[in-house]
Every structure is written in C-alpha cells, then in structure tokens.
Image 1 (cartoon, rainbow, N blue to C red):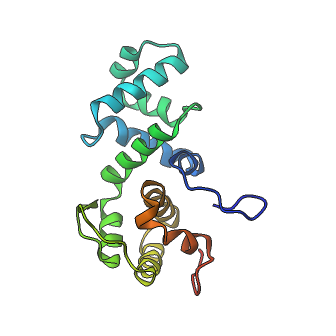
Image 2 (cartoon, rainbow, N blue to C red; image 1 turned 90 degrees about the horizontal axis):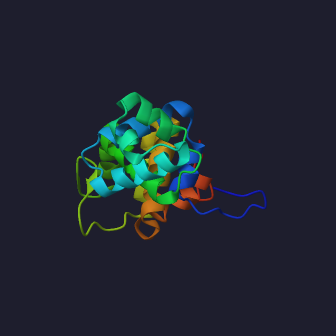
Image 3 (tube, helix red, strand yellow; image 1 turned 45 degrees about the horizontal axis):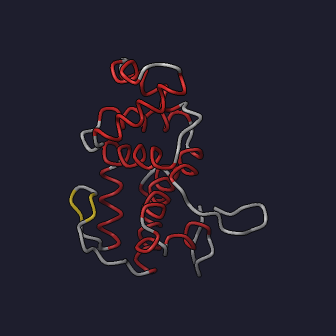
Length: 176
C-alpha cells in the first residue's frame, strides 16, 4: 500500500488481485463462476473478456468445465478493476463468511452472513484496530489482509480508518 517513494498507493481491487498467490486466485476464480451472488451481466462480461483474450467465443468460455474456466480467470493477465472487484466479492461470499462475520461483529457493524446492512455506521478507529488484531490472530494473515483491503477498496469512506492500521501508521498499531 506504499510506493517506493513512501506515498500511499490507492487500494484497488486489481492491486489486491495481483497481490494474491496462485492458489488463492484459483479459489477466488472458482467461487466467481459458481457463485449465485454474481450477476449474470458480470458473468457475461467475464466470458467476453476471457474469450477475447484467449481468442475463444464467449459461449465457449461459459460452457467450459468449471476447473478450466477458473484456471483461465485465475491466470487472466488483462484483468480489470471491475472484474477483480466481482471476483473478490464472490470469493469472500463463498469462502470467507466466518472471517467476515467475526470482523463485522467485533467492529459493531450489523450484517447478515457477512453482508453489511444498509445504513451501517462507520466503526471507530479503536474498534477497527481491535477487529484487525483479532482477525490477524484467529485467521490466516493473508486472507485477513485481502479481506480488509477489499473493504477499503469498496468503500473508503466507511473503511478509510483501516488504511493507517494496515500500513502500520496508526498510533499503537501492530502491522503483521
């Protein structure tokens, strides 16, 4: 989240995606194709982008076996921010409900199985720091980082307080 000059880089879905290891990208891509939370229009867009890149018809992408589609998507060099955001969303909704729910409970944000309730209020910096500490202790550190950065990339107004915690610039914050 910091460039070579020490300036804060914006947290974007694409940057998060590129920071993930191959195993996590494959798991996320699989979740994207099989999730019922992904809109049909986003599946169609992904099929079109992959088809164009691989020189296949979009229909060939859509009808390919799930492991093949997931592999293509996980290794897609021309991923854009919108698609990366959708893949990250599907990944969290399919694979990370327990972690998301734990964090949102700790920071006091109302939710239903990780889906944040409409009108939720921004958590205090203290609650955010507590939530980050608990996630880092109870869950895989990389999974926690990916989730927290995803929150920040989706809504920096609500989750902007995570940025200094994640970069270790918050007073008393422990960066793991």
